Amino acid sequence: MLAIAAAVSFGLALLFDLTDASLGTAVSTGTLVTLGLLLLALHLAGIGTARSGAVGGGRSWNWRRARR
Image (tube, rainbow, N blue to C red; front, side, top):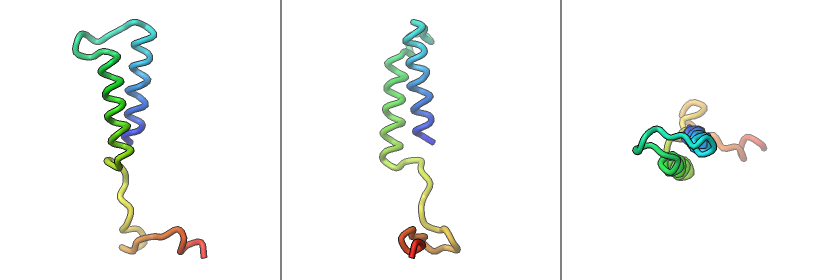
């Protein structure tokens, strides 16, 4: 979910940069890029992702075990 928010932030930054638009002095292209990088870093760190475990009646599901 955070990766999608990062992509939206990068898309808005690109759109604002191409049209030379801004939302005032507080929100600029650099601010949106920084936000996108923060969201991407949080996504890569595993924050906001679904927890594995508790699948199948409380047992941890192992794809290697399922392939046998």
